Length: 140
Image (cartoon, rainbow, N blue to C red; front, side):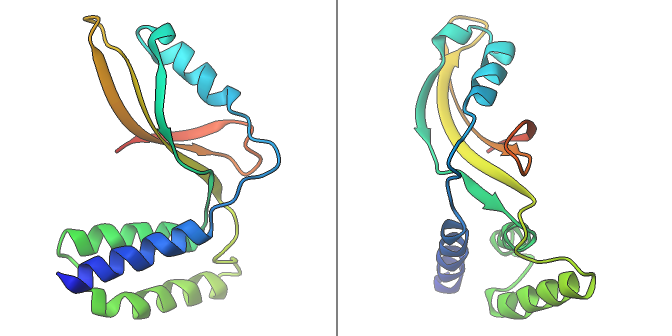
């Protein structure tokens, strides 16, 4: 249990180190998404928004391995070996393991549902490299 907690703390600290904010963030993309997809867009209220973070091949590998550890499919003892293997795989294939694939931002918000009651939702928005469009949205 202690090893799981240690792994999660290490993984989160690595992801947080890769968090940056480019000079200009187009929050308009999320506003447009909410206006087009919520039942009552005027009821939208942001509760918490995380920092805009880089999404790299290594952060993707850490995220997937973290899920495997939590599900008991992998041991925290092998995480360093796993990450070394992933890094060497990308390098062998002429891919920078720390290159920007996309940007991501987590958001918690509330908005009215079809019945007029409020729902609280947590999701992650993924943007392309230039932060010009939303490429994916995942509910937590």
